Amino acid sequence: MIVIVLGAPGSGKGTQCKEIAKEYKINHISMGDIFRKNIEQKTKIGVEAESYINEGKLVPDDIAIFTLETTLNNDIDLLKGVVLDGYPRTLIQAKSFDKYLEEKNLKVDKVINLTISDQEIVSRVVNRRICSNQECGEIYNLKNNPPKVDNICDKCGAKLIKRKDDNEKTALNRVEVYHAQTEPLIDYYNKKGILTTVMGMGNLEDTVNSIREILDLQT
Ligand code: AMP
View 1 (cartoon, helix red, strand yellow):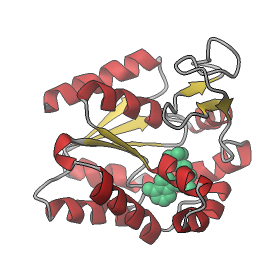
View 2: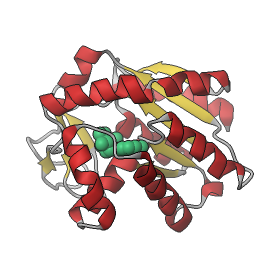
View 3: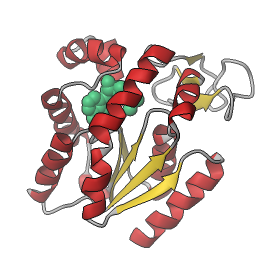
View 4: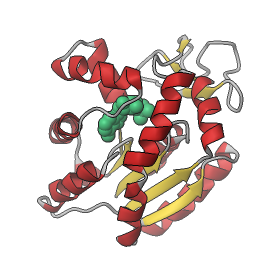
């Protein structure tokens, strides 16, 4: 099963993708996590991507496509299935991904479109905290999903951190970028008949259940 989760920043993509990967025992690719790891390790990709990410812009398509395909070729067994979190984010990426899959006789099976209002996005983003332990990477929100102990991950006990790009100014840029460059993908996948929209605003468990119902029809 190849699943894409689309959604604005703060829509809960990361949290939902982790759930999907765990429940259906498929791979999880978070493009944002891959870029952050590259930045930390100061790789060529990291150096090229950093300023775009810090300004809330998209990393150029050629770099994003190269990064995704390298990850798929080296680390991922597509036959086991994958849920893509934050990829594709432009029509160019979507079309290139379709071509990449076609060459392997595969296709995108399902696209989940997580919706959230623009007002909610900024609040979600500035209140987001993530586990500093990359192996864990649990995602919290100080308002609607806080850790049990301040600044400590419930799951692994590591410290929680705030992403550098999770500030109000960058969040507003990311909202604009989302509407201009990523939203057209809704129409692209809708026309293929594989997109389902799920409200990302409600309670976490309700969203998980709605996605489960959609994916259970697929498996
Ligand atoms: P995320 O963790 O999904 O919020 O992504 C963080 C940042 O990484 C985004 O704001 C972009 O700057 C960059 N990024 C992640 N995925 C992509 C992509 N598919 N194409 C271009 N830039 C991306």
